Length: 141
Image (tube, rainbow, N blue to C red; front, side, top):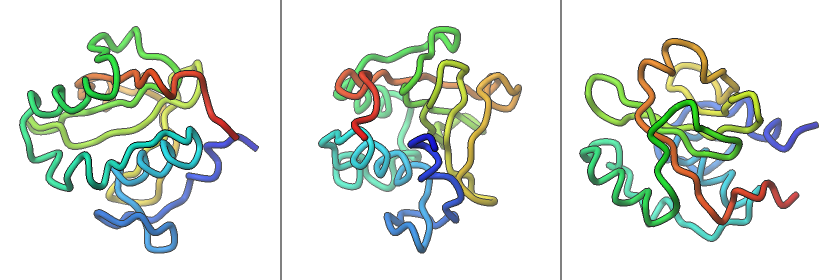
């Protein structure tokens, strides 16, 4: 069983860090960073709930504190955190889990799941990736 299997199937609930209640895309990434990678980041505090309502410059500024920005979708690697924009705003995030650009994310409709970055809905709406240096060595499980 892959480490990512433990994060598939969560229901959607905005702002919740409780697995039983559900997660949103931001809280799902936070759980993985803390539990799998043992990365000391408190996205609940460090990145506010209104993160996605802020403009892209704010997103880049906050991301740079944690790692390197990857603007070219073809340079995305395993463990990069992905950001997507819809209707002009950055509104979604996920994390790449393998060398084939499979990523895990939480959708509003349905449960957390795996998806392929090569699908048009993701390639067309890709904003950037963040390569968090401290986690790029892989899971600590």
